[in-house]
Length: 177
Image (cartoon, rainbow, N blue to C red; front, side, top):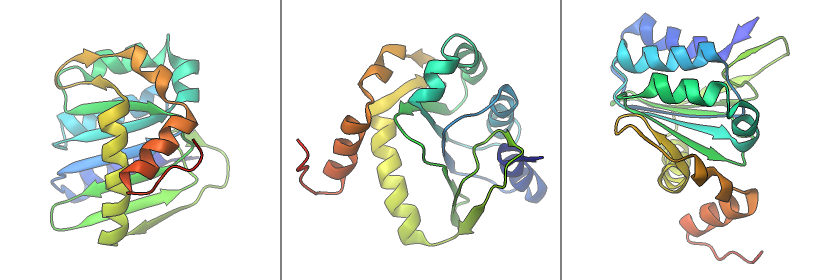
């Protein structure tokens, strides 16, 4: 049984690496993953963690795991955005080294064959971070550090609006209207 979220926590804990920021984009997660994210920020001193979750996950967990996230992320440097996404990418900024991890694995456990690839290509990191920063700026529903929660914000995160946001950020015209 492979749990990608546990891999992230173990990687940072094992090497006692100071982390400037982490961006995690995932389709879904579990309560154990929420606890792991809290551990990263509370005990392993991750300075900023931005989590992008899917609209599907939000809809399914709106009355269960989402309120738990709100409680657990309170006063921690954790932000959560909701978008119509199936992307599984993690960015980790260690200061001197920035890595991109992408593949098929969500944060939670899986009995499926999963893959992920780790690279330290700064151009790829910068490209993805630019997109993720735009998503966080526009679609954040939980700001843990400021203790602000805006659930109504997720209703505007359709795939068409998200696509327009990404295309516009990259200086392209949106020809899909």
